[in-house]
Image (cartoon, rainbow, N blue to C red; front, side, top):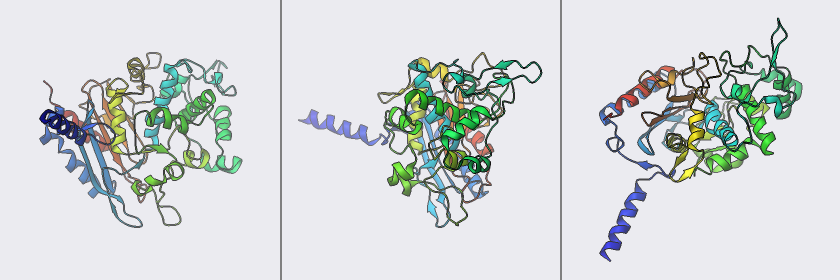
Length: 405
């Protein structure tokens, strides 16, 4: 009997230190991190809040399959009422959706052989125009790899008002046709870097044509639910109204109220109706920590596998076929001109990162085995904050806190 009681108490203790997402919550020391160094992130984040860069933020530091630091700062909302930030706050991930939604979904299809990394886009979208050399008239087709690495040459964005006036809204099919036929191809694919939301809208449409279902439905089932995520979804206003009280709002609209439960990005919201490859995922720090831990774990965490180890290695590799100046792995940044969230002390060439326009970011150092999930709603109440310096400083502090034996 005494042995049974002891075993039960140990089981209860083990459960008590696990987050709802399945990761163990431990002290920094237990995760191999220096707590005196790690807590320096507090002053960096609080300084940015006091300077008006964002009303609040949440940080989660992951080491392996454990959360070593999880903390909320400031407010999640200041208009029309002031509400405190909590670790459970759900954020509009903006372009971080490209990584956790679109990229992982596409990598699953590459893993299963349903999509080829070197496949021409026109294999799936026949009307998709190539790049054409204006001098020689040589044509080069854009590939799936070009889309994932932002080396396709597609222009960065659309004139949403003009497309809306032409086709109405939402108009997802017409938007894809417009991208396929009319958007400028600015350079020979693979030779340069131009960050473009249109790359990931195109990837969304490839996935949808292969699967016969919406990206949001596929990603929910095969990525978010498979990993046991509780607070991650597209279209929360429709699919998860229970999350609305947890969501950090974004920019105040013409009616004086902030946008809440609908994606901030105009292309995703107005043209694609919230189901979009470039933006649209809502999530919290714990759920994103699970995704980061899965990537650190070669595609598996807490007994749940979302990708094979070799697929994660492929996803994290900068393709040799691209010009070195591109600096992008598949769906993630490594060393491009947009990689400043990595800071200066993470492992060069082995650290993935991505940011979102609304304020979130993720940094994953594959060699040192840690990740930084830093969530903020910098566009609330107005779109005028900058978090570039904060992200880099936080990454450097976390990298410094790793105890290297």
